[in-house]
Image (cartoon, rainbow, N blue to C red; front, side, top):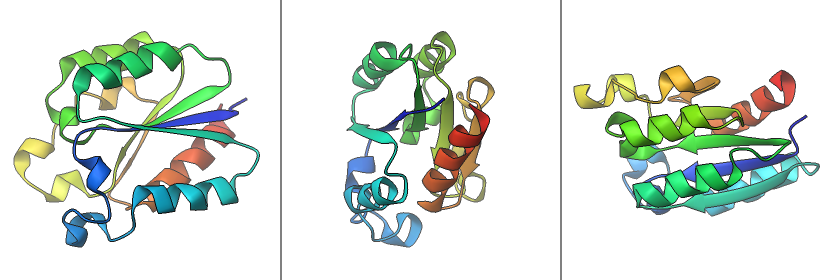
Length: 143
């Protein structure tokens, strides 16, 4: 049973609410996280963001075997470039949900390939911040 959800954001996602608001919206992730915490009070949420690939991999290794945990991973641009991140997700036991706020298939063609898709339990793509809520519900129902 999932009790603790780790939300991990990759490069540039610290700028949510400020960066390309026509694509990513105007709500900061800190504000949205409060909404999730209020909606799911029985869950513990941890939020980690890094612009550095190795820090994200270290975080996955550190918490990827925690009983009762699950990950929501928006790896940003690393989704399309990082075999090392893919291997880290494949190596851990905790379920990982891949999330993209924008619809990567309606953007530049280099974004159409994800190294994470085949090693993640599910994917929520192009649903804005609502994708995180749906991913939480998926983890609660599936695991």
